[in-house]
Image (cartoon, rainbow, N blue to C red):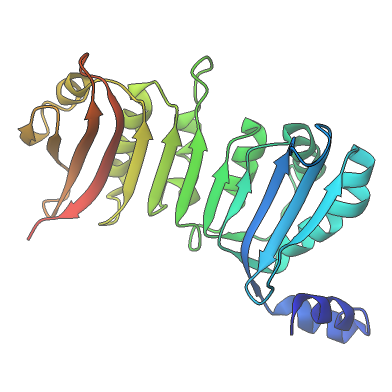
Length: 259
């Protein structure tokens, strides 16, 4: 059934509602966007696209009351039944905080999100990270604020994050974020292929000095290989776009297997 038919069918009887809600639906993306040029600056959009729909479902709202009445029920329903390829939220922090505040501390089922791209409220980011199914979440993406300490140690306590196949952190500006992830990987013996990309983190020599006891191979300003506690695995660090001051735009780390 398509989404519209499912929605009507679940309203016909309690048994049909339970049947529909027990079966997942594949969703290409859920996203919140705001300040669109085609709308007023106060207008915000909530949209989602299901794989058998040609066009996404889009709902516009301008007030919190509209969000609670029009958006919240369908948003929670989609989170409940969906296997979601991407949940993208870079806007509307006040509304997301309101949503999270309603359910903070509740026992809820884990969300089946494959790629969580979440930049707004730290509180909400923690809530979604904690309530995302670690067996489903493959890609966790966020951004750090250069003027506020990024809570990487707290974030890495969530299995959904430290077990993700890929972590991306934009605008980090702090090399300590990279250190924390590498050290967590070593601690938990992260899976082969696990990847982290950190943007604007710092300086090549800082990495080399921090892990000097683990460096087994390096090409200055390009590549470093680190040992782990597992003799069959290493951490490969690739540095990109080194500038004249030895700072780089991004660094990619990956757990590689030793053959």
